[in-house]
Image (tube, rainbow, N blue to C red; front, top):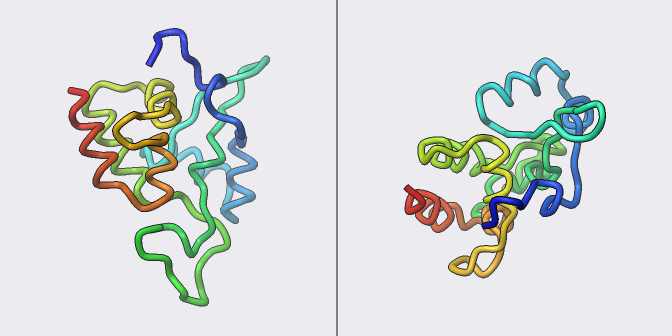
Length: 136
């Protein structure tokens, strides 16, 4: 990963805090708490800088855990990818700031054959976290 690679070079779709709140059916204050708790991460981008969250962090409710899709009827329409929080914790433990975590998650990884976020979205969290832990 090049030191000059920015999130904008890698992420093709962004949501603002109000956009995420609307998608999740909650309020902006709850989304800001999710950011503080590192359930999701975002970066400030644009002029003026606005907190932006990669759209790929949100998935349809039945795919919260893509390794075991749910067929339950009472699921939310959208939710945060379940494997994201633990992966962000591993990255934080290895010293990654939020922007660096976004760059890593969206950078192609040779071992995975795809980006870490795509691997997470396909249910490969153990493999992604193993690679993230090796970054120490």
